[in-house]
Image (cartoon, rainbow, N blue to C red; front, side, top):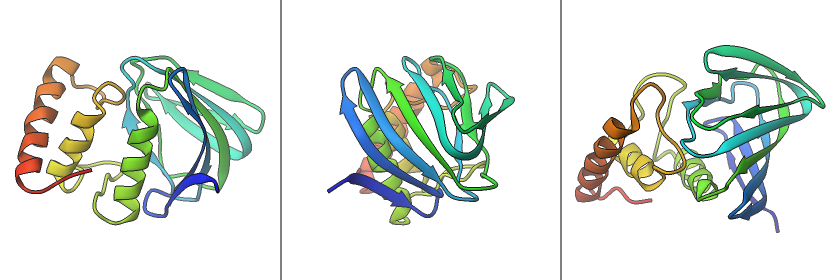
Length: 170
């Protein structure tokens, strides 16, 4: 049985290929309208290798179109994501080191799929306290762009604490 999560709300299906300390490898299937909001990985690099379809990454505010057979590596601390996709795409994604990013993918996609968390392609995630729980739990793996870590980490900690008081759990 494959370890996979299909989230129609974000337009992504993730199939976990390898989740070990040195690397996380997933097959990412993006449907039309699928997106990943801009984010940074404080201490990881992420490589996107396009298998099928066309795909446009936003890397540091610059659009980078990939065709089948092409890849793009995003170095740590670089803002990246992708706007709602125009067509289906299949990618192999590798993150080094993995840390606990596989857990983040599982938690976020499950919360989104189940309708418990909405992270729109722009605007404020809802409910914000549950988002705070998620961001605090995976603070080594993922961060919001444009906000210094020394500001956002205490913010996520406070929101996670409040979220716990209101029953938000991963």
